[in-house]
Length: 485
Image 1 (cartoon, rainbow, N blue to C red):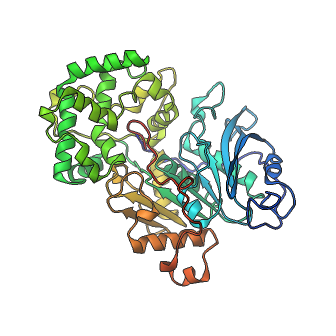
Image 2 (cartoon, one colour):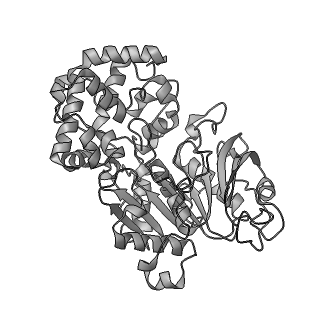
Image 3 (cartoon, one colour):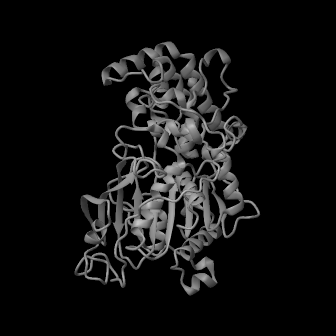
């Protein structure tokens, strides 16, 4: 990623029209019962979803034990002025039963249209609503007014979806997301603290002061082992020392694939950006064991070995126009509210670094205006410290994005920050030490309203209510090319 938000003064705004559907009165135990409704009303769940004003069906996909719908929902481009245009926002619904709790998930990017279940959904054995973040294609207004892409507008998207679906799914709701999705879940709670019954935010960066990034330098000085750090640093340095021959290879690679470099301003800038992402990208997505795959002696490695190692970790397509275009909404937000990290490279002589970590402005077409709002993240951070309620933050010990985490102050209630030892950007509750894992699971069950008397009395008895499903419950870190959360 490139991150950070600050001081967003409380925008007291209530969202316009909210579609509603008739309330459920009872529930069958399974979504795959005789009628396939998951309701006691005799009305099929698909009909109930499509009765919501603004909701339309893209497709339904079968999955054992569930109904899975890909839907469009009509949203205002500007929630402050709902009459000034709308767009279609993709959401998915993994329906189990209206008598079960619901997990509201967003990754902060595009939504997957393949059935999947996030960790809290498995823990509470519930339904799952997943939202595509505004301005990610195809959930983008046309024409796109980029000033309407901010964290409050996105939180208001979630609020409207929740208000529309709550009559259909009346039990407790928990919001969740990983990385930018964890940030999104946190911002949603900040602006609409009465919607959710709990929040589980995974590996959520919190760049409060965009110009002060020394925490990342301290992280990279100690993460993992010295042997691993030395290997990675040496390969990164060697890729810059051999810039000329490897850039020739890069040019051929770009020509073969039709890649261009207009947005970032040339192949040389793109090459350095990829190389400087290398160490960060390794720790974000890999574990200490993967150090065995890094060339042990970079100076004696072939050009092909250096290229392959950097490409495997960072991806040479990442900063091409084609690689950047999908992530324009992210870089726009990083450059207007979220902020972006800047780190130093003490193992590389200055003459080898021409640009350093480039700002998000370099990754967004110049036709899109950007102005940074330094108060946005400070506002969220202050709110979390003093007002967090039923919030769980999970970080990975070896994840660079966790160098600047959310922290809790005296005003927080029933909220927690845990770190999974040895884990990367894919850290989760299952990776916590046993006592914390059981405790976190118990709190999630309690917030969802499905904790048994035994769990309420003894949190160590807490277990996920749904059996693990290898197809639904993918636990690998969601990889985003280049330096993105």
